[in-house]
Length: 471
Ligand code: SF4
Image (cartoon, rainbow, N blue to C red; front, side, top):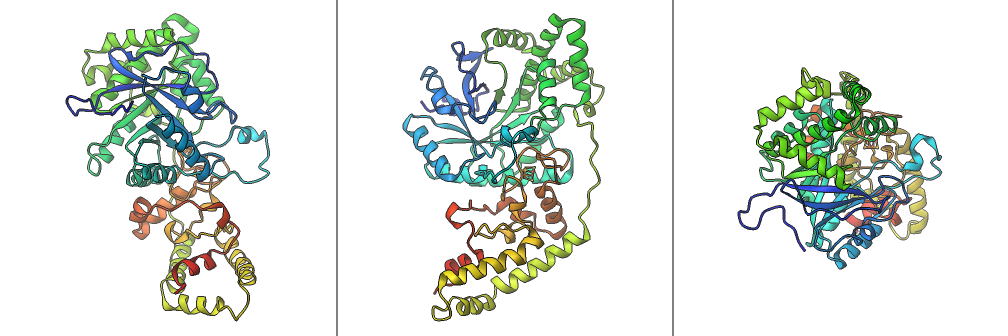
């Protein structure tokens, strides 16, 4: 069954609730088809609990066929061939709704439990969307994290979102978050370019236990300020019954606020048990007739929020500026790129090097590979990917991102810091440089293809020449 986000009779987007199931636990009760009058569908998260979780396709198969399902696919530790296999299976079994993510870091790499013996590769969401779109069978969702608090990390998220939409995304699902200003801002920033693009907000009945767990495990990209934790802890200690009631009331209010704002639906996490859904339904019914302003007022009362700043991160952003060295590097490498690759010089050099009589091709490749690595590794962090993307990434090498993402950031930054905690996110740097040198368009529009495994450890110069200048 194909469930459109539009209702059949009015062509209006139906507000729906998508109930999330983590695939690690498959002991579930029968699923409801509606919650508080809103149509409900099921979503199956991919490797959220552990790296070995059962795959969403096999878990989804255990639920009744007539309920619409959204399958997540996380690109972590996967390549395009595995994704094509997933698409084959999904297509064969009639699943039509996908959520394509690059994914957070593997669980085995969290807390330093396992050393990085070899580099983990990620299939980028942009590339996954491009591949899925070609089949013309799927309704494709992408993740988006609006809860970013520096100009550069926020810009980087939006630049990548443009690419995802251009690649063929049909809707987005936000990261879980509680800052209503950011939820509203997502709409206002997209309205001009994509006025009818459906937005889904991720919400959760946030208990003290869940908040503490997420903080302890530093769940990537989730902002949980001390104020939130303090309120939840106080309530929990004072009156656990009332605390639970407040948890569902807040969740209900957030759902209704998103509906008032014009969101197409809700991705509902941690609420798949019948008693949880019952409490949520009761709370939704209590506030269903409220206006947007009334809902916001009650939301602020329940959170004891005197201003929106209580939902923002406790760490204040640094005023990061583009460094002079970054600008000089950009301008120099850009000039060199134009000189060597966009001019007759490139053709001349290529013809000389690849002249069959000059030396054999495999020897030429080895020599070029070494020269390329030596000249570029110390300068930009080149890892001989065989498909140089520097001209499309403002000469900041994607290989210096721990996930190797070229098209834009994952959702895991914290005030420009990388999810891996050991560097500034390269996409924040890139976004900052792009604004100064007037190159933001390239970060919004240039879809960078994935690097095939057989190209790695070959010379990108040779590959470029063979592709561009052979004749
Ligand atoms: S550099 Fe940025 S995109 Fe890459 S893993 Fe770190 S936070 Fe994610």
